[in-house]
Image 1: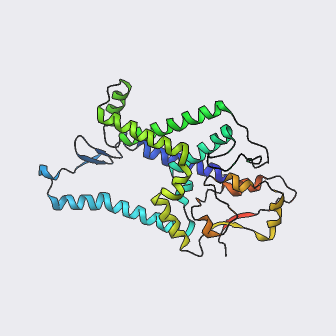
Image 2: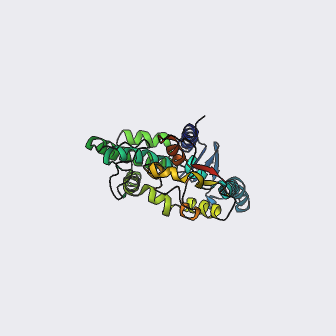
Image 3: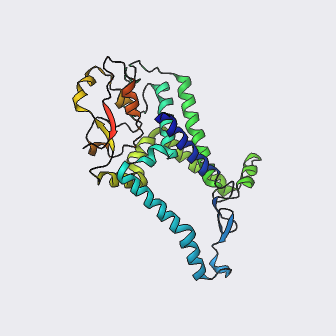
Amino acid sequence: MKIKTLRFLSQGLFFILIASAPWFDIFRFDYPKGNLIILGNDITLNLASGQIPPSEMFFIIAGKILLPLVLFALFILIVSYRYGRLYCGWVCPHFAVVETLNGLFTKSIAKPTIWDPKDSPHLQPDGTKATQSTIWLVITVLTSIGFAFSWAFSMLVYFLPPFDTLNQLLSLSLGKAPAVFLLVVTTVLSIDFIFARHLFCRFGCAAGLVQSIAWMGNDNAKGITLDKTKAQLCKTCPSACDHACPMRLKPRSIKKKLLSCTQCMRCIQACDNVPRENKGAILHWKNPQ
């Protein structure tokens, strides 16, 4: 199975999990009742009610909330130490949005982000020039706002009863506080998705930074590595790997310049698709030593 397909499946399955969690009471906080719901079980967090002694509440929170979170964080750190920001490139929903919108922006403004210095005649791996389209620009902006709204609503139903909230939204009877939440979060996320999505991943994501630091601390960690014996083949290439990188990195750089690499391997795929007589692989995902 191709890497692209595997990443699509892993990203899709994780998104389905986090999007469906509140609807099926897998995990959510019922704000009106003050209860935390985990796997269909109501855990009251209202200490003032006296329903559960504080000592018992401590063990509930520690055992059912904090311990799983700590174990999950530890697992991510162990994986990151060996493989880098694998969570970002293979699971994170935000990075999936980055990739999707980069592709739409390429169709609309001939470059993946508005911050790329100029339109390039070699944005595609095969060297063809990307076109500019007003229609695609409108589609891209509307898609960005649509992503933002769906995310905002998904966040909202983690705190309010999902089905009741959906009915209120459809009947235009949503309360003031939820409506303001939707408006503010949709606006903020729309700005992020349109203007700063990859910049947030590189410089604003704490989870990504922790993974990067763990990866940089391991000299034997796997990563994108250039086969220097075949580097001369890059002379006739339209920098396909650079243009393919969703994070706007230079994949042929040294490790410290790839701090925010998500190990998505799109650069390797783009390199392999470049037409040339010698098809030998130039970029690899391996231990640089």
